[in-house]
Image (cartoon, rainbow, N blue to C red):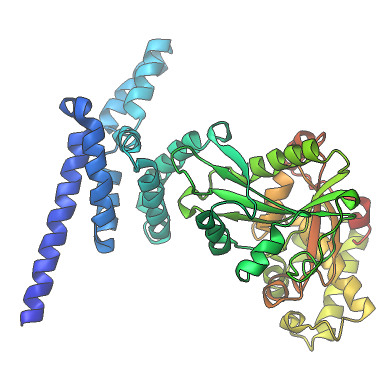
Length: 435
């Protein structure tokens, strides 16, 4: 009975905290609060940090309903603009159509720690969204504002090295999302003279990287990840640098998901590297293909792939049959390879052909590879597919060990981006020859 009373008391306390927070939101938006808005916003930042997790969905529900535009006012303004499309009517329509919660978020952003609070709020909101589609409009408001505030024009590009603050270096270890950093020795190797690490920072989040990219400076375009992240490898000499290979890019702020940062980061870093090392001739990636095995295991319908010619279709069907035969009719066997026993040559060629079809013809469709979409939409060219590029467990699970090089030609990225938006996957002849 005592436990029940305690639980009831806790629920009552939590409800009071939520009601107080909602009242503060309304007070922050009121005219009387304008002069004192920063102080009220600071209270909101602290109150959200202390709000129990179980109460946060109720807060978002209130923001989605009670802080939405007035439908009748929007209808009246839209009708007036339709009848007389003047500048004044358009301004009025924009004013009444904007949800009041956008101004609320702007005012929260003015408080010390407000920007970090809003990023945290959106992180929590994104976690709820799959089961709460009614919060989609609220999410759109967050994304709209954060995309403006985290425009690359407001960001600062910094090189991270072994002399950077320990707290920053710890965050690299914590947030590395592609190839895990195995402690300080591993990180030290990734920051030696033939390696580079760059990150974007925002003035309101000092010392907090938003996103970072790791680069290897090499004599030639790499085909496998293991040599690049071998912490026992010897650094290469500066005069051998001909290629800059981007081999990992990691977001540090889940609340900024969907805000365009990575595409600008790669281009900024390529420009900075070319300025530092004019001898660099190529800028490329060594990238995973996380969608390949999922696609193969779902028994792809090759006839549905757009742009395939009949001879190509026949070859792909034969390649798929060969792969199945080599794995005892279970393609999951491709995820169990090991470096001591490579695939037979015909099986290798079949796998490469299927991967080329996936990259060229599936990327624009549902089930296409997200990393491919990112780089191709960013203006890169699909340059080369690499067998046994990553034989670690994750690489085998995602892509049967295959990795891909995307080539960034700074003079061509805008043209290639435009071609991708029109439905074309720009690719090298060597990749086309695999089909």
